[in-house]
Length: 508
Image (cartoon, rainbow, N blue to C red; front, side):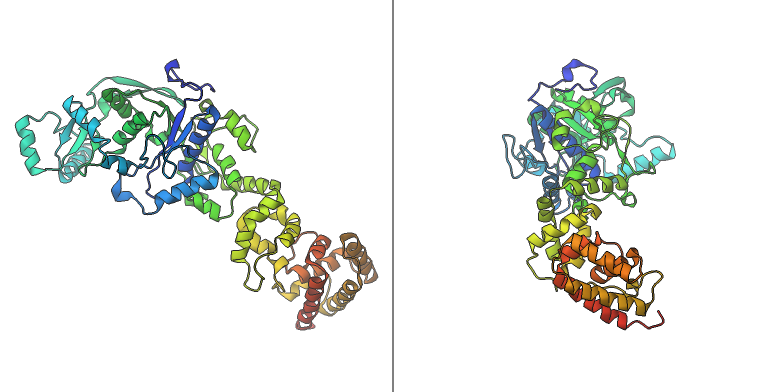
């Protein structure tokens, strides 16, 4: 297994025994930072021959969003991140949804043990009392934290408090002083002052565990060897290490991956182009391009390699190559990746991706089903221009409609007038009708000869033809386009162009 930045050799897991988990909360659609962590987990599992577990941490019932779990799994599947254990797959540690595990009493046993050993205590403070306490601390310019009022209550005091508040929370009793050094696979040894950490809640008044307790218990029971999570959780690491110690559990290798910033180095937001993962899918990005982009947000193979295959990523992924400095999300870089992957995509695969989109988005006048064989003739002309799948209906549309829409004035090229253009286009039409072998060399030879005969620059004549048959001034190579459109469709469009030109005032 690849080396890792570990302070002690005991943190190394044997090859093949690595077990990692992606444990999102279903509080909305998964965003790029969240999914980036899942990708790192998955690559570590595949690199080591280990297991990738999906666990849904839904203990925050107030923030749960209906359908979010399904969207999380949909995003993973879109990116090709399959899980070895978890919802819809099962496994020896089922269930893999924490609310279902809570109903089975998985978390109550550890809480009862901590209470019995006086490593945790019931806290009867009301939300109102805690709010007043925090405001007073802020007024004194102190960091807001619990004042441990309930930590040393007598039995009689607890009984009295229980009458007043029969639904207390349970807090973990942190050490009151001392230093704690914790090991992180990305940052090495990190020292914390225990005197600055308060007694945190491990069981809420509704009986559900907090993240602090639930993930520690589940990671232990599911034999998780490595925990990868965002660096915003690093300040909680001493709390979790003390909780592991109190429960007698071995703590997994911890790796806090760098945060993702916008190009201006501020917190990543939608104004930087960031979005929920499935919005990128719907916006026409390819999953392989998205994976390649995401993996480079905090990890690198070397100082020069950008485009990497799945095989390269799996063969080379290791924790020691994860950077500790923030990663920068650059939507332009993602667009570049997507263009690279689209240009390299086999035409059959690209057609498979585009057919459903074209079926949905092309105008109703286009016959369904879309002719796949015809699409495969179109794609070589447009593949270089496509940066997103979502662009395809607009970019390819003129190949499929009967008549593209455009302003006929655009047919009139620089240095030309309406009447001269109309005369020239009539000759273009009669030339097309006379051509028997409809291929690129024949078309090009015929129209270069016509331009010379009409004493026009080739660019003028070709530009007029391009607008007339495609509706656009920017299109693939003209004669390749004419060949794919076919003689019949080209003649119809040239005939329409003459009609459109006739409707333009002669002064133009």
